[in-house]
Image (cartoon, rainbow, N blue to C red; front, side, top):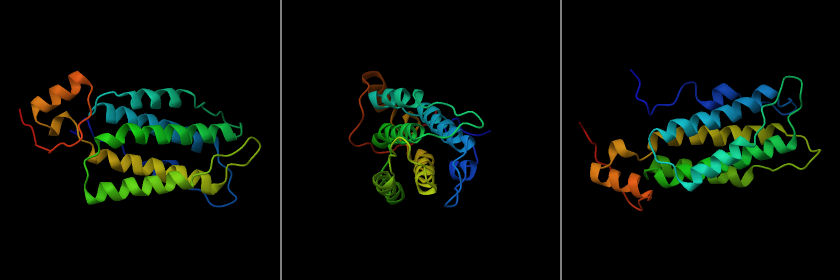
Length: 178
């Protein structure tokens, strides 16, 4: 039986799909980005406590509309997804245990975040824009395996963090059994 902290498969990049230059960004692409952001958040919430950053993500995510078949993906749709993606990273980042792999992923996310273009009204959402956000969502998906949560903290520390809503500056992972 899978752990409650595992994310569903396939990973976002395979599910959402990268597009080629000149391809249209379809409603299904947009809607899958929206759905994967919420899926990643919901799975992370099983492992880490709610914080103000989590509330900010939920607020940003709630503004993303579901695009119906035949409707164009608008600039505002793309920009709202970019904003929610960044806010989800802000929620996860304090809870990621530093390893060489997780630090590399976080640096890659920050690079993509600086490259992703927020588009103006009337601009086309280009393949590069879509693919960059898909890569960012994939990184968020991959970062979830590095989350520090109550199941790997000492029980006393977990109780302190969960009851006080504090985020630790440094946590030594200890496998808790029983």
